[in-house]
Structure formats: C-alpha cells, structure tokens
Length: 109
Image (cartoon, rainbow, N blue to C red; front, side, top):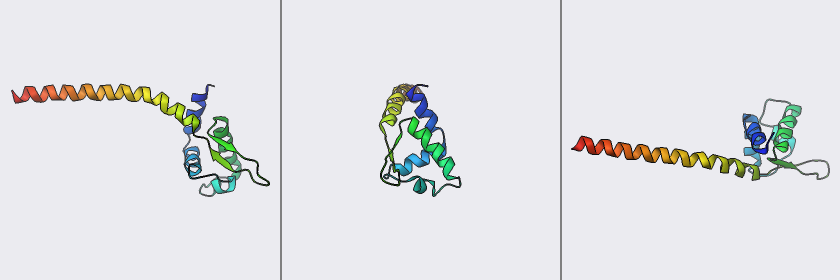
C-alpha cells in the first residue's frame, strides 16, 4: 500500500482521529490515550499500531513507559493532495459566480 493510502486508511477511523487530536496537544501514554474510550487497552494498542505504520505517530522508549507523539508530516502530504482538488472547486465556484452575475445582468435589462 502506498503511503497516502495508509494515511487515509488510518484517518478513516474516528477513534484514531480522536487519538491524533489528543496527541496534537502533546505526548501521552497508552493509558492516557485510552482514558476517554470505552474500549480495551488492547484495542487502543491496535489503533496505535495502525497510526504508527502510517507514520502519523512515533513512540518513545523512556524507562517503563512509551510516550506517543504526533508526527504531522504525513498530514502535509494529504493536504497537498487535497489542494489540487481545492483548486478545482475554486474554479467551479468562480464559474458559478460569473454565471450568476450574467443572469443578474440579464434580469436587470
């Protein structure tokens, strides 16, 4: 699977998106990340593995605990990919605006 597909796959799950949102505030342990969710630590660990495989998080190795950290670089790739489509929609909106102005001028005549 290519990297962009892995990132989109990881982002497809709301639990993983919530984990990323929490990590945007700073590093956290697995237990801290699991707190708000009604799922097991094992399930959280599986979500973390998906995020790690997609390159969206890194895990440290400090003594007894392994803090998780957000790595937002893959999100830049997603944003760049989406930007191409943003330009497409901006052009469409511009065309719609021009069309509506023509209609308005025709009605005023």
